[in-house]
Length: 160
Image (cartoon, rainbow, N blue to C red; front, side, top):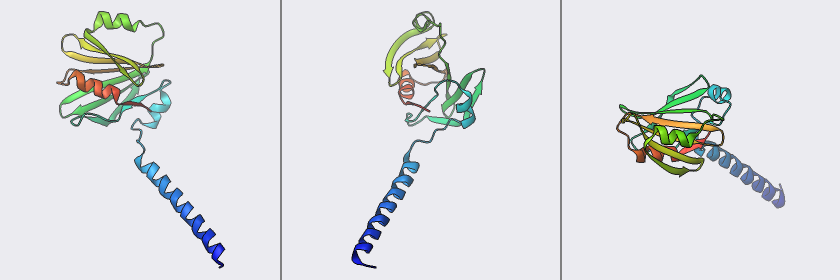
């Protein structure tokens, strides 16, 4: 092999190795969507799941379910459970009126996907409602979970 051929061979080999390493790194480091494929295919609206949770909370990957056009899953820590439901955004639903009528101590905050409202229902259930372009995401818990933690979870949502 001549010197030029060797240099070309080494250059091509290095480029191929770089591409292989980049591909493996991308597959290894990209977030893995925990929502089962059959649920993603059944839902006719965008789905979301949390990625960066407070230290004591974790996504229960075995809790995903789909029924009556609603996706549900659980974020938990020991006996603490936060129930998350997602459904297509109702067309003629007045969310602002719902927040005024149903949420005590209602406050609003901004997320990547839109405005969210948090508050209390029935004096002991903490809730967060996030309305995106086409999905209504609703978190609720009767556990000892703070509004700050619920806000962190809501802000950690990413699109499936």
